[in-house]
Length: 208
Length: 208
Image 1 (cartoon, each protein chain N blue to C red):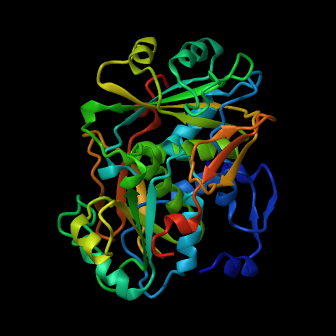
Image 2: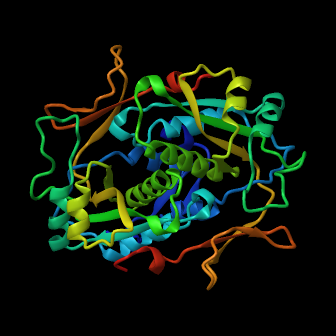
């Protein structure tokens, strides 16, 4: 979609330019979704079109993508993923709250071993784009890679690096300051609100 | 340039919600800057405040930051960086076109070895925030780490992972399709325009 294209749709007065802050704060790791709200395959392609225009170490661009937005493929991908390691009594989203789209990010090892930064760069860019569209998701590293490779019939030179699970979020996620004990583990309260402790600016900037 | 600064000047009518696309496309790797335009230290802190609210593998949040916005510290950091590996006849920005701010991203190894994705996540988030402010920059991996650690007097448990060089860009960077020979090396034309070949969507989505 071109800039000119979108100008014709909505007239929207922007009063401040810190749109990105809004997206970054809304972009929580969502793990429960409204499974009745499907995602268009074209939407996933638009996200990847953004990702391909991000910085790449030595511009090698070794990452490849598999997209899934149909219930049948989604249901095959889901069992290969592990969810929220710190929530020991939760096995992941139940039927009805599962992701409605996936983007499997792979590294094409025939293109040379890239630096690792590309993975986080594209994953974050795609999730910010998802949030902008009223979607949300989660970067999942804990993946049964061999199993998923077989399901997707991936050639050996494509190595799975991350899976992005996407959908319309139905959970509330809040950021908390870190408590005195320094514990960084996220947790879920009785109202099922997901809490994520984040370090303060003073704790992370060494010359604050 | 502050946000408040230009908001008061211009009424800016935004017409759709695909602001992120605009930022992603404007966020090129800029390596030449207007060195007479300084960056506020507070601006760098705002960028890191965004970065600390991004997803982190197992929420470990092992990254730490050193910020520099003063000419004296900047001039010490600059010689530890290598610029644009593919431009063999260019040694980096000349005096007058050098970065006016740096964010050195480090990993705190006392906090456990985190997954690598955090680095790209925060680097991309910071650069998008910079672009939103009329700034721009470059993620630099090719760093004389030992030398820079000594200059910044870093304790041994803080390992430098990336340096973000920032400023008001003065160069034009364009994205090109990849030519038939598949070469991904960026290059600079006679008008000093920097060209970056990017793979097409069809080339990277295996089930397009």
